[in-house]
Every structure is written in C-alpha cells, then in structure tokens.
Image 1 (cartoon, one colour):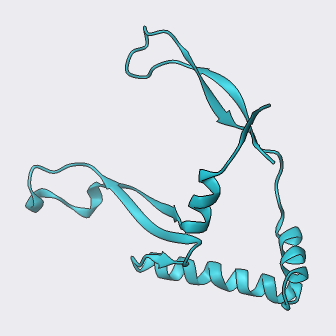
Image 2 (cartoon, helix red, strand yellow):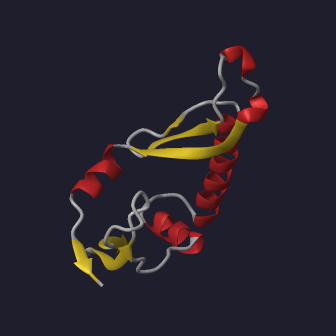
Length: 126
C-alpha cells in the first residue's frame, strides 16, 4: 500500500518575499494500538499476549535506563537510539558551563530493515 501525501504551500524561511512553493506532506492512514500489536505478535510467534506486553514494558524501562547513562542502544537491523544535546556556544572551553545546554532529544537511526523499506516506498496523492 502506498504512503499517501497532501501538498502544503510554504514560504521560504530565509526569504519571506520569495514565491511560496508546494511541498509533499505524508498523511497518516491510521494508528496501530498496543492491543492490536500484542495480538498480532502473539499470533505470529509462540509468545502469549501478556508476555509480549511484559517484554515491551521491560524494554522501555531498559531503554530509559541505558539512555540516561549516555549509552547508545543498538537493536540490530531495527536501528539504534541515542541521546543528543544542543547548547549555546562559548568563547572557550573554560567558559563553557553545563547550564549552557539548552535541549536534549532522543535520536533514532533506522537500521537495515527500515532503510530498505524506506528505499522501496511508493507514494500516492491523497
């Protein structure tokens, strides 16, 4: 099934006087709940739905624990999670203080399976 998109008109943020252009924006076709996922995973494996949820819950706890310690969490062909930060600049390393760190975010880098899926996507105007 192709990924659906709509066209959105946007201004150039560097040049507000420039003509606006149209850009594609992906449109969601729905959501998948944990209830659906646990049932589907259970049906495709030997794991019961309660164990699927238990593993997912424990995985999230471990992900939080490892990321909060500054580790990269690698999940094979699925991808990896890592904490990234941004900060104000300082004139020298001596003048830098951790209070200058403005923001932290979690970065996900897709692995082979997800990159392969992205490379073969088809698109359809909604």
